[in-house]
Length: 91
Image (cartoon, rainbow, N blue to C red; front, side, top):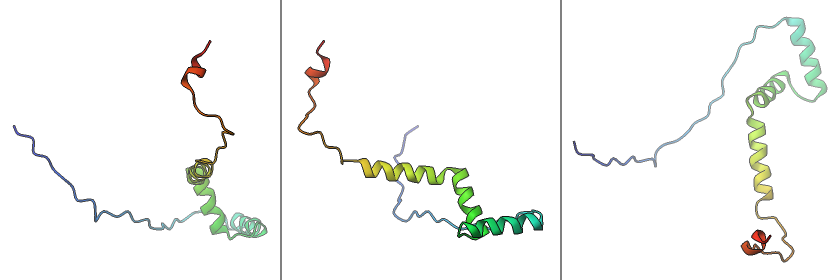
């Protein structure tokens, strides 16, 4: 058996994100109370539920961590200190 190398052309590969509609079955009074509470927060009930699902899925947390990493990357101030392996291993 001879192994034949295969190359894949990934130039045309795209990822598309689409919105999904979800139907919830909840009590009408509960929906109205939730709508009012979301309104107090300056949001529609739909916005509030979407953000809650994003938090539940961890999307916001991961984006926040990546953003924080980028903020901290390369911003250190060693104040003249440089890495010295010998100093680290002195006893």
